[in-house]
Image (cartoon, rainbow, N blue to C red; front, side, top):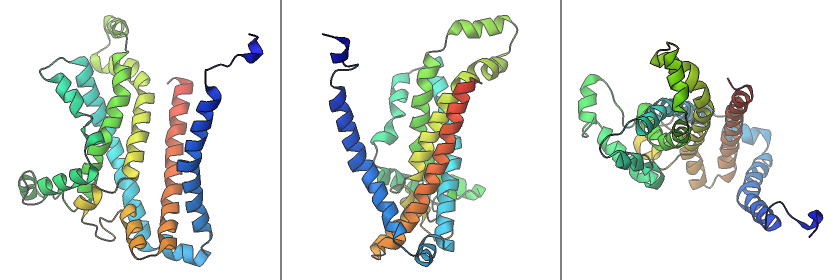
Length: 274
């Protein structure tokens, strides 16, 4: 058999065809339909639907809460991954499996549980309320539930990197007189940064699209605790498809920009290696 008749991978054409069909039917066409429907609106109709004070407040809350939750996930995810990789303790495997719970738990169930636990009379809320912390039906509650949903993404992206570290590198740094913090900051953190950025992007994307859990713990109060997804659903329930599409396009465009910036930072960091 000549080299011209050999393929790089067996079944390459079939694999590419299935991949292209999947992207076309489940990604490209729905996104294109959303954009085309929004373009059909007149500028006045688009502004009246997507750029009202209520819509802008919902979009701002969605992105603000998602960014805060993603940053918290990075810190907590790094800590959890570090403990799971570097320490041996009883029921470590159970704790490791528990990290994936948000993947399997229906988000509506998570919202109901958090709303009941953190309400003013809940098991946890009854201790926080006298201290002035109100979680359920506030913006803080939205952040808390988004942290719960996004944490596994950071842990699972950082964990393999930690497991692959060469212990001799840390021992060499210690032999040269570096403290534990100096070793972490100068030796480990630069190698962890790409994984942390990836986990941040995944947690952010997960939070931006969340609906089920948030509507139960937020209270859905316009201008205060109403997220963009809830406003879109409300527009659809009122048979205002154009208004819902306009808000969705604004959210979609902002999401692409934010995730593009995060991915650019990740590639830049990996390219320069610092």
